[in-house]
Length: 413
Image (cartoon, rainbow, N blue to C red):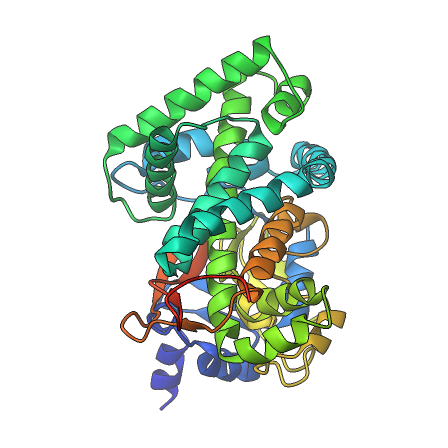
């Protein structure tokens, strides 16, 4: 019986039940919220307080280049470029880079709010005549890619070129996520294109993120450092917001008529829905940390928690967001939960720099969708979770989730 219980708490078991893992999370948290998995030789952390403590503990690092092993088939090219980014380093240089990015992203979010809303609306109007859409593939993916390009300062206005490079971005996201599919030549094409954009921005800088990287020579000392960080922003920005919109919409679809009714009297409802949807369905299932030295958490969190140098720790943000010690009735959609900070975008100095941009996209997307009349999922296309890993994270994706209007026209109510 003990062996079976230990086996059920393995990382492999958690991967198998990615569609609805919360029963297993509850059992694991009740047994030990900092649990060592003998099979995978890594720690599984499922408690809110425990995740926060490890995120804030300098003895643990996210240094992808030092600790994450290379994978086969195309990943080496991506990893070699990504791991040069200062955002995958650690220590004071990472802090300076993250602070710089947070400051610039905040300014960008304020300046581009109107543009982001326009991108969302235009995509919606493009899909409206069709009468249905795949919320991830047709809607969220194109929006997140277009917004990320806008933030970086890259203009791909020609539709066929946009579609082609959207495909390149999907390929590089898949390979960076541990799924080596697609044509590896697309990787070279995308990296070559970004290198040209960096060179052009160097000659004619503007009010964009690539220009900001180039201006901060103390943080990004050469063109390759700028390129690696540009690739990181493009890949992470695209994949994360795509999952955010897709999983968030799927999570609240059963309450759609009620939410539409509330929206008539509460224009701020999309922002409120967004935070609870983020808590319940974070686009990042877990993030990875490694112990840079031996660390004993046994006194802070009673139990045998002697973490050894080099051991991997998986912080399940999804589980922490459902911790009943923090969130009352965590499995219920409740807008009152927004008074407690969820961990979807991390915590403290390790929070996601692009969270403000992602929120604007999600708010605008929900606002467009809430205006629809009779929105419902297509019974012929039930959603199914697809596991996607990116740089040590694990992301469930509802695909396909086809939304359609009962009258087959996506018109405003």
